[in-house]
Length: 74
Length: 200
Ligand SMILES: [Zn+2]
Image (cartoon, rainbow over all chains, first blue to last red; front, side, top):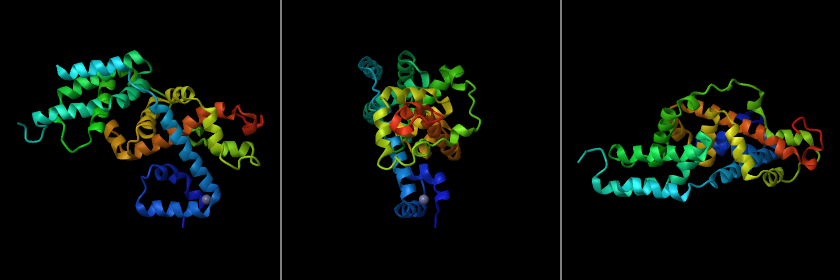
């Protein structure tokens, strides 16, 4: 059984789905039973998602795309 | 025809697929170099190298990671000073900062619903990108690769040529530092801090 003190080091590997299946299940169980940890994990997950969305709004300029296609022809 | 490499017929398809990663490579280049001019040069150099060595690419392996590795190598090559600029990345209290717990501590009776909604509405895209750029480069790289591009730990380890354990610790510390950098913008809300935060 995991307790709250075990959760901090598992936070990111859990959200990144990088724990073993057993560990993923153990964390999930704890989150189901523990609202404070659950709220925290949901918070972190949403922040990470938002940062990702912001970062992915950056797009390459069209003239760079054209230059790369030219590069490919030669 | 090389036994392991790419058949000439497939090279065209592969280079088309490689061009599909242009936005992702450009984003990475922009975060690394800090300006659009150098970012464009770096991306162009990356594709130049990639197209030239496409025959060495092993079909069935990860094209995206391969391209990012080429980009990192090109960056280290051409921006050696920037890439190696010594940064203060010794462990400190920044590495354990938690925005969630800070917000809770600041108004324990009020954080009930979804504090992340408050955060998200308070953070502009510009602010997030500026905070990313403030991270020491070792952290910026892994955060960009994981949180913006969605690479796995193993892929990041491959792209950067570092052990997975190092990826994990840099990612943890980079994300914590990012939250610390974003905290002043978030906590500038009376409803979240009530003027009692040390961050505001
Ligand atoms: Zn708990």
